[in-house]
Structures are given as structure tokens and as C-alpha cells.
Length: 112
Image 1 (cartoon, one colour):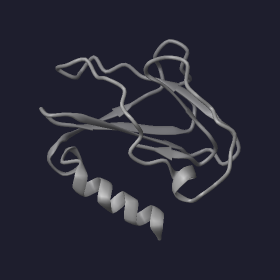
Image 2 (tube, one colour):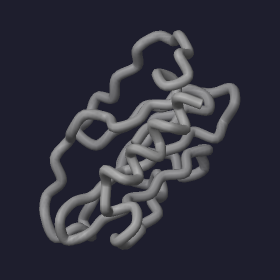
Image 3 (cartoon, one colour):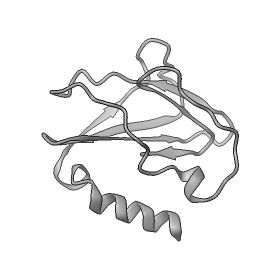
């Protein structure tokens, strides 16, 4: 229940979810694999953007590389708003992406 409460708080805190546009990403930037099992999209408005990424693969960790050429500004990396592994208190090894816009998602992990 705690994880779902966090998601509701996130929806209220980020107006991009209700008043913005949505852009769905393919993992086809340099080093990416467009056949992976990651569902990724950006909710954005004139005021900001939020990247949401889901690894739908129940067995494999996947890395994703994204560019944001369609945004009218250069995005900056910020803290995660939500991580399903943290919200459900699932213990895992720490995996950190190498590039500025690279994500590494464990099996069935969601990050916002």
C-alpha cells in the first residue's frame, strides 16, 4: 500500500502527469537495444519533464539510453521521485548508469 500511496503523491506533485504531453521512447540511442523489455516515456510541459521507465522483463536487468532532442530545453538529471524496488523494500545490489541519460533497471523495476 505504501508504494501506491507514493505514486498518488507523485501524481499530485508533478503537474506534467495531468496537464502535459507524453513522448514514448525507444531504446535506440547509441548503445541501446530497441528490442529490450523497457517501457519508457516522458510526461512534459513548458515547465518541466518527468521520465518514467519500467523494466517489464521478470529475469533480466536492462540498460537504456535516451536522448531528449524534442524538448525545448536541455534536461538535467535530478533525484528519483519513485523507485519500485525501494518502495516495496526489495533488497538488491546497486546498479548505476554510466551516462548522463542512461538508466539501468533491475527485473520488474520502475523508476520515475
